[in-house]
Amino acid sequence: MVRHDFNAEVRGLKDFPKDERPPVLLSFFSFRTMVALGTLFPLLTIIGWFKRNRLVESPGYLKIMLWSIPLPYIAIELGWVLAEVGRQPWIVYGLMKTSDAASPIASSQVLISLIAFILVYSLLGAVGFYLIVKNARQGPAPEAVPEAAAEPAAA
Image (tube, rainbow, N blue to C red; front, side):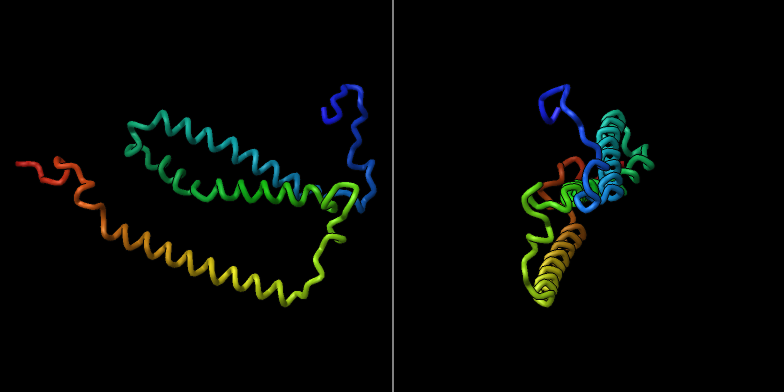
């Protein structure tokens, strides 16, 4: 299919020299896990659609959905792992290897950048968490609560 010819030869991984093969195991599991998660998401959506009027009666489903919150982020990261690991050892296939493209900078410079990123994103995360907790404790604005729900029912 890549060559737009059904008679074209398809070369296997063993047809390439060992030093030009990507790490297969990591690529294999990244792809399989990403596909499994990509199958799980529509299934959970379909189940939720059928339970949409009875969600309060489905605490198990709600717990599954709660624990599923990080899964899209994991799927995205696995996609990046597959893309980056799967093309190794090449930056540009047949022209430049990753080892030739690495910048000649000191490891201390990389460490300083890493520490700076960790500090900035930790600060942003802490501020975001603080604001979420503050707003959750404050509750909805009075104008957001419908009239019927705001007044207690007469006994």
